Structures are given as structure tokens and as C-alpha cells.
Length: 404
Image (tube, rainbow, N blue to C red):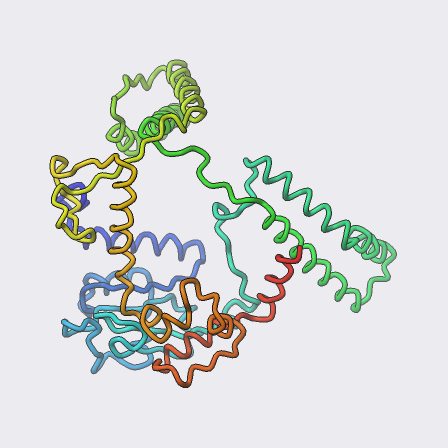
């Protein structure tokens, strides 16, 4: 809303309203929620602002619950009140074993205090913790036929090498003859672990596909055009308004097309034409590619302080490849240097970890043999490094994936 210059809506109030609805949707689906928030306001017991969100979503403050509200420290170095909070649903709160507020700069340099809660996650889940992977980040995608073939080939070899089908047939035979005993569960669990290991190893054989087509303005417009006609087709067929999405795309298109929403045949024809055009542009994508960067005309302006509302006429376009690279490097240096001063970017950890942490010190952190006694670290910082020790299961999986 700020970027659009919309001043008719109270941004803070709207944000709180949206966040409340989002949390309610999650809890209705029986999800548990932990909300860490820099609220930029104190907890108003009168039921306004962040306090209303907590009340409406039935959340609790485990830190206040454990230590009380009196004598709470300010959490912003130039403030007087606690404005940073960790809220959670009641089911999670029941498994909190410790909580608190740290001193300034105890973990990393900051103008805010740190806050923490320790949760008995194993007891809460009543099962081994399993990392959930977003499907979009996986290498195995059904639309990537080459990747699917690679996956199947390696998985077939893995199954044959480990005689998995023969072992499954043996278990199946015992089930049919009703002679399966408790000791056979060891074999069943081993098979389950082995198959999972084979599937992960086979997926790791797939080469990660990046963006197939280099970006260009003409490609961007072609994609938007296809998206537009898809939305209009969906609107007509399903009789559900897509007006907001359609208007958003229209604002991004260089040329506004003539839209007839009552003639489904004409809309489908336009969609087909847009798809054909997109495929042709994708085939010739390397020829359409443009390399440039837009920067402020005032080159003395700090990269991290460029106003979002800087007028169009105050920008200049750089197309020289050498200069493009120069400005990108300058910007990245300034942006990434924001971490300068945190423990891992200063001595002695800077030298101990090196550029990629693949050093004797980094390896000792992962295998749990690291000696932190001689390092100028706080108790919490030492605990952080100790908690990075890999489990035996993680080592086994890493070695297996490399071997297979």
C-alpha cells in the first residue's frame, strides 16, 4: 500500500487484520502457530493492536507467562517498552520448558534484545522430527521428463543391487502363510529405510534445472499475456470473478489488449494465440535477452537508501556489460556488508571459518569435537555452535548419498 501511495488505509491496522485472519485460517486447519514479531508497540492490555490479535487468535505469551509482566525490560535500545514478542498457541505453550529475553548484543550485534523459547519438540510431535520439503524445491518434477528418466534408472539399479523385490516377496510370502513374527519387523523397517535411502539418492542424481529461458522484456510480456487470457478463461468457465488479478496484469502490460469477456470462443482463441507466441519467444529467448541495470542518476546515493518512490526521470539505464557488472558488484558489497560486525564476520571466527566454513574448525563444529573455551563467545553463542553438531543419522544419509 505504501508503494502504491495508498494513504486511505491504516497500514498497521490492515496488517494486524490480515495477520489475524491468516492465523485463524491456520488454526482452523488444526495447525499450531508460533508468531515472532517486532510489533513496534507495547502490549496494550486494553485490547488494541497486537493485544487484540493475541486475544482474537487465542495465543499466549510464554515469556510473560513464565516471568510475569512486571519489570519487563525494554527490547529496543532507544525505547522504554517491550515491543518484541513470541506468541504461540496453547498446545505449543504446554511443551515450553524455558523462555526469556537476552541482553543486547549477546548473540549478535543488534539494537533489539533477543528472545527465546525452548520447546520439547520430540514430545510434542510424539515422533522423530521430519523435515518437510516444499515440493517446488525438489529436483524431481513430473514435468521434467529427462529428470524422471534419470530418477527411475538410478532407482531401478539401486533396487536390483540391494535385492529389494526378493526381500519384499519373502515378507509377502510369510504374510500369506500367516507365519510373520515380531522379529520380522526388523527386516520390514530395514526395507523401509533402504527404499527411502534409494529414493533420496536417485533424486540427487538429477541435475537441478534452473530457469530454462533467459529473461527479457518481450518474454516477460508474453508470459503476462498468457496469464491474462488464462484468468479470463477461468473467470468465464467457473463464473468466479478474477477482476483484481486481471487488473494487476493489465497494469504491467505495455499494450492493453481489447478484452471481450462474454465470447468464450474468442477468449480461447486469444489464449491459443498467446501460447503460440510465447513458445516462439522461448525458442528464440537468447536473441531477445537484454542486459542492463537501472540506477539512480545521483550516484552518491547509498544503495540501501534508494527511495522506493524515486521518480522515473531520476533513473538512468546502464547497458555496457562491463559497467553493469561493476554496479552489481558495488551494490552486492554494500548489501552483504550489512552483516559485518556479527560474530562470524570478525576475528577470530572469520579466519576459523574461512570463506565457506569447510575448514578444520568448521568440520569440528559439525562432528561435535569443537573446543570453544578459548574463544571470546557468550554462553549462548557457544551453545549455538554446539547445537550445530550433526546427528549420526545425518552423517549416514550424507555418506550414503555420496556413495550411491
